[in-house]
Each structure stands twice: as structure tokens, then as C-alpha cells.
Image 1: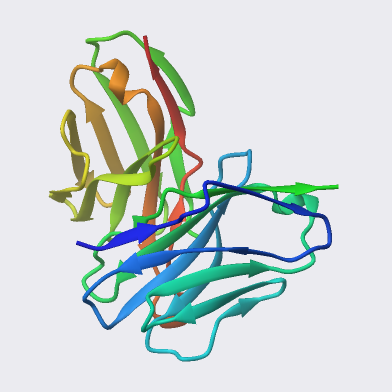
Image 2: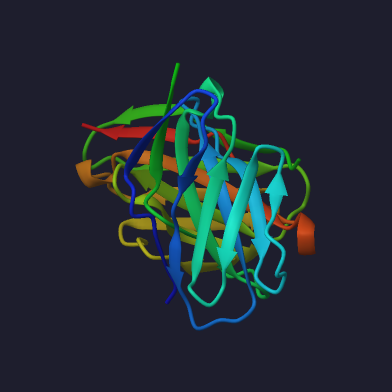
Length: 115
Length: 114
């Protein structure tokens, strides 16, 4: 079974600074997806970024980028120019590709952006 | 984005009573999921469905049952609610392919069992 580990339960960052959230995972699969989801106080789950394991290039979405290290099974999220609206829970998630096997989540990192 | 609606948004119920949560989608997606979210645990899969009348158990299925008699509706039932089932429940669908693949979540149901 796949597991996802987020080792930082809470983090804080000053507005406009850069922060990196860590995620590691354990799998024997070679073809899979990795995701970062954001959950603000509204409770809504919002997809931040996705990475397909067969792609070497790290995914980016505006101020959000990932450092995907397949051999190390590491998938960290970097948030640049942090904004107050980035304050949220962030969840790393793994899914084996094909067959629609369900998404497996880490326990989350609570990020606070401080003015 | 897929239209996905959960009802109710909040519910308080007494221990031992049955409770049914509803998830409704408008775009005919085949796969639907129920997760629960608890502090320190992230989101954990309860049950999922891969078609009408086709369901399977997840990591934390004890005490829960599901039904899917129509593509658009996926119901989660707590036959006899317990305080340990106090949680936030999320429904999700999966859609897209390749670079567009992902899950879309409902807004969640906060269930309190007293």
C-alpha cells in the first residue's frame, strides 16, 4: 500500500517570502500522479498543482512549483512571494495511474502567512 | 469543473441514530469517493464507487455503508452513529486524462454526533 508523509504539521512564513513544504511517499509503482491540494478556512479542497511521474520536468503554476525527485520519492511544494491568501492546510496526495485507484493523502501541513 | 453538491452542509445527530449524507454530481462521472477528514489524519478513504451498484471499501469503512443506484448520486450511511464518526465528510469525483486528470471535491459535510 502507498503511504504519503508530510513531516511538518505547521509552518509559518512572512508575507512576500518563499516557503517550501515537504512530502515523501512510498510506493513500488512506476507510473503515478502526485498532487498538492490547498484547504483554506472555507474548507474547500482546491487543486494547487499536479505532477505526472513519467515527466522529468517539475510542474509549475504561477507562484507554486514543485521539486519532484522520483528516485528519492520526494515531492516538495515551493510557494514564492507568499500572500496572506496562501494561509491554509496543504495536503500532498498520491495516486497510482490507471484503474482509478483512489487518492492517498498525507496528514497535511498548516501554513500561516504572517503580515 | 464538475458540479458536485453535498448535503447537508452541517448536521448534528444523536448517538445511535442513522444518518445519510448525499453527494450529487451533474456530469455523469463514473468514479465517486467518500473521504473523512480528522485533525492529524488528513483525508482517509471510506468507500468509493466505480459505477452504478459497483462500490468498494476504503481504509476506514467500518460503520459505514454506501449506495449508488444512479450515476449522479452516491449516498453514505452511518447505520448507527457513534461519537468517533464526528468528522468532516468529503465527496469527490475523478475526471480528465493525462495533464488534466484530477479530483474535484464537494464542499464537505460537518457531522457532529452527540
